Length: 503
Image (cartoon, rainbow, N blue to C red; front, side):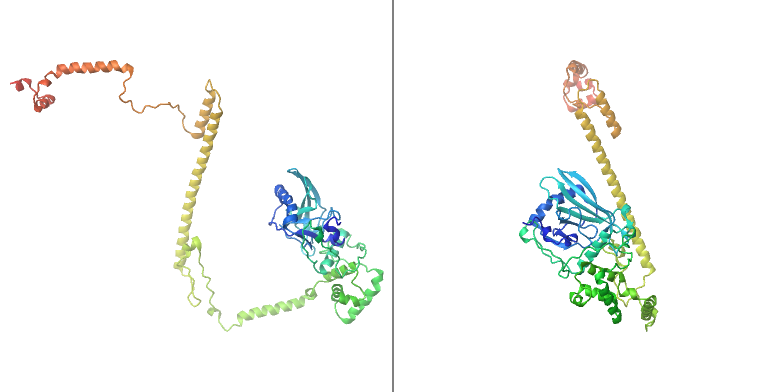
C-alpha cells in the first residue's frame, strides 16, 4: 500500500510541484495572529477530508497577501520546500509557539525576490503547521506570503545564490518550458485516486547533476543580473555542439533561436546533433536563450532614435497640419458639476451644454460659486461645532456616570463605621469629583404644618380661645341686641350708637 500521495510523484518533480487545496482563503496582507493561524490549522484536516480536493501543480510566484492550505510530503522533503519562483536570501528560521494545548511551528523566510524581475528582496514567507497536540497532521500546513519588513529589504545583487539554488532554478525553468502538469483533483485521503506524476515525456532519462560553475560560486553572484559564461559542454557533446554552431552560422540565423527550437520541439531535436533527452542540456538551452534577450536588444540607438523621430513627427502633423485654425478649436465641455450632498453648490451654474454653445465661464458665475462655497463651509463649520459640543456633553455625562458608579461601589463595600471616618472620606471624594456640596437629608421632610395640634400647644390654644371668648363678651356684649343688618354694619364701622338705636 502506498503510504502517501508523494510516493506517486517523481523525485525530481517533488522539488518543484506542490499539493495545494482548492479551498479559498481571504487576502491577508499582514502576518496571521497566532489565534487565526491556530483556527486555520485546526480546520485543515476536515477541509481536506470532507470539503475541498487537492491537486499537484507548479506554484507560480504568489503575490503578497496570498494564503493557502498545502500538504507537505514529509517522508521525502521534510525540511525543504518545493520551488515557488522566489530566491530566498537566507535559510528558513524555525520558531515554536504553544497555544490551546497545541504546538505550532513557524518556518520563516524574511527576504526573497523574483530573479530577472525585481532588484530588491521585499517578499516574506511563513509556513504554519502543528507539530504537537491531539490528532495533529504535521504534513498539513498553511503557507502565507506577505511584504517583508523594511529592515529586511536588501538589494537582490547582494544575495549570493548557491550552486544548488542555481541548479534548482534551471530545472524549474526547463520543466515549465515542457508545459503544465495534467491537473487531477482528488481527496487527500482517497488513496485509490492518488495520481501518478511522472517526468514530462520529452525527458526520457535523468542525467547526473552538473558540477557547479565556478563563476556562479563567486560571492555576490545573482542569476537575475549577472551574465555568467556558458558552462562547459561535456566531452561527448563537444564535437556535436561545434558542428551545430557551424551549421547555424552558415545558415545566417541566430544560434539562440535554433538551439531553443531544438530544445522545445522534440521533432526538431530528433535530427539535431544535440539530443533533447538530456535534462541539463535543455536547461542550458533555455538559460542561453534568456541571456541573449529578445529582438529589442538587437536594436541600436540609431534605430531607436529614427523610430522616435517618425512617431513624434506624426504626432506634430496631426496638430499643425490640420486645416482648422487653433482659434476654431473649442474645448470639450467637461460639465463641471457636483452630485450628492454637494450638488447645491453648482446647481444652476455649471450645467451640461452642447458643444456649439458658448462654454465661457463668466465672472458672475465664479462669484456665485464662491458665495455658495463660503455658505456651505459656514454651515459645515456650525454643524461641526454643534457636534463637538454634543460630543463634549455626552463625554461629561459618561464621566459623571462613572464617578457616581465609583461612589456607589465605595458605599456598598463600606462596613460598619463607628467614628464616621470612612463616610467622611466618601463625602470628600464626592464633593471633589462633582463640585457640589453634600448635606444630610432627613428621612421625613415637613412640607406644611397642617391643623394637627401637638401636645405642648394644646393648653396655649385653649387659653387663647377662652381669652377671646371673654373679650368678646365684654366688647361685643351688645351685638346680640342688634335687630337689623344696618345696626351690625354701623357697629363694625364704628358709627354704632346704642342709645340712638334704643330710642
